Amino acid sequence: MNENYNGQNQNENPQGMPVCPHCGAPVRGEATFCGNCGNALRIGFAPMQQNVDTMGIFDYILMMILFTLPIVGVILMLYWSFSSSTGINKKNFARAYLVLYIIQIVVIFAFTLLFGSLFTSLLSLGY
Ligand SMILES: [Zn+2]
Image 1 (cartoon, rainbow, N blue to C red):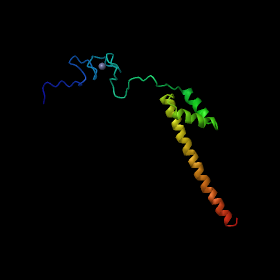
Image 2 (tube, helix red, strand yellow):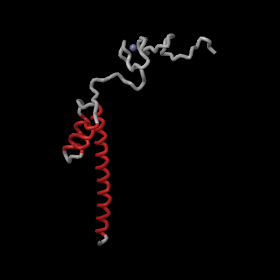
Image 3 (spheres, rainbow, N blue to C red):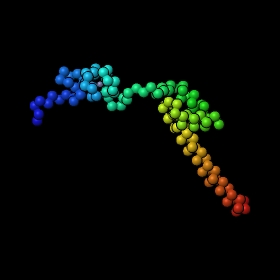
Image 4 (tube, rainbow, N blue to C red):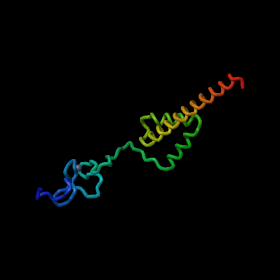
């Protein structure tokens, strides 16, 4: 057993103050980003990006209402899903709706085929 081992985290200096894993500058314990180099100090926190949009509850509600519109909804879904100027939150939300929309169409199409063929086979039996 190593007698010199003090049980401290590798990212802490002997004074118990946490240091930045990127540049070694001392940082406050509750800090999320290094004040010296700006890198994220904790896993799960990425450095702030400028193109990230923050969507509120009403943005989601508005989008959901717009998506229910017959033709406009599909156009908006496609536009927000593939436009490069769309923020990542809006894009992912539009893509999620697009996937659900495609599944819905496939299911309806499958049911139409199934019941359509049942109907024609009943007709051919003479009913
Ligand atoms: Zn740093």
